[in-house]
Amino acid sequence: MLKKLFLLNVGLFFIPSIYAAELNSGDTSWILTSTALVLFMTLPGLALFYGGLVRSKNVLSVLMQCFAIACLISVCWVVYGYSLAFKGDGLFIGNLSAVFLNGVGRDSLVGGVPETVFITFQMTFAIITPALVVGAFAERMKFGAMCLFSVVWFTLVYLPACHMVWGGGYLANLGVIDFAGGLVVHATCGVGALVIALYLGQRNGFMKTPMPPHNRTMVMIGASMLWVGWFGFNGGSALAADGSAGMAMLVTHISAAVGALSWMAIEWLKSGKATIIGIATGMVAGLATITPASGTVGPAGAILIGLLAGVICFYATQAVKSYFKIDDSLDVFPVHGVGGMLGIIMLCFVGSPDGFLGSGSAGISDSGVLDQLIIQIKGIIIICTWTAIATLLTLKVISFVTDIRVSSEDEEIGLDMSEHNEQGYNL
Image 1: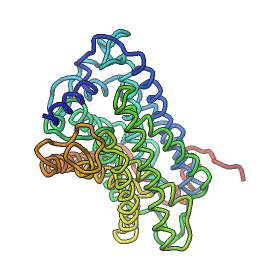
Image 2 (image 1 turned 90 degrees about the vertical axis):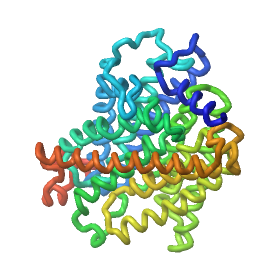
Image 3 (image 1 turned 90 degrees about the horizontal axis):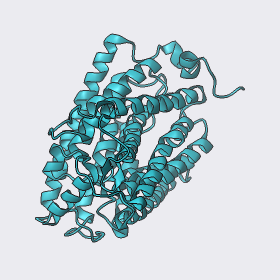
């Protein structure tokens, strides 16, 4: 019974075909604020975070990629993305009934908020997901290919995932719980990042020449903006200014702090030094991991999730680079992909009502943790399998249209000059 009530609430929040009788000004104010916070995560938060992590000759290319993706996906979302994600009753994708936002007016409501606000809020999620993938191909992908890839990947990967989980599609009907994007955002961008890193191959000099972040101050500023913006990311996903939003904000902050501290502690013990890159990356891991569980766990659960996020994502990062020698430039898969999937699984154990360390709100299958775990794993398998296939297909198709990777000479010069004829710094 509790599971059915939870799925009903998700439907009321996320399926635009179900309208409330009247507008709630408090909920509307909160989602307006959350929308700005989530966009703030990409511009300038993620752009600065990624920009600081690359070498100085590539900083503008990363900033340009994040900015261009925000523009491209915004247009695609309005033209067809929202309709395919949230309209219709298809199992895997929506329909085109709301192309160019046809039928959306000032008085249209989703839950207690204007549909225009819901559309913009969901647009910011659609923007940051392909922007996160930038970290996998940083310093070696052509700008034109990046633009094509982002639009096609958004269409083939993000929209079906969004519809299946949040738009009333197959995974929603199956009972998958993903409060704010462990599957829709983090698993898709993580697996997509892994595929594209393998497809492009290593950067010139990878594992032979040091490639340290060029601006750690920029990394810290960008990471801090991500932390602040994540309150809108998770808290706003309640689509109401209520206790669920408050608890989501609280557990988000706790997991981020514990993830940062646990990553820092491991690094400190291993190398004898604590670094700003380490503590910032641990914070992002804690945030990514709590995201799918932020609607179903309490403070104690958030502490455990943050701890596991810092530890598991740290060693996943080491394994990807050192053991498998995969050049996922800015650790998108081990931090976001692994973290998102970890959160999807952990909510079964630390959520409610029959898990331990829960928040007291409905969310886990009333027939047992194991049943929900099986459902969650099915969700992971479906989303990750389709993401891998669609990402590879996208890259293959684009390769017939244009070169995807810059030449060795252009890579040596740096993408700032070779792709944009600009420099980040006048030295």
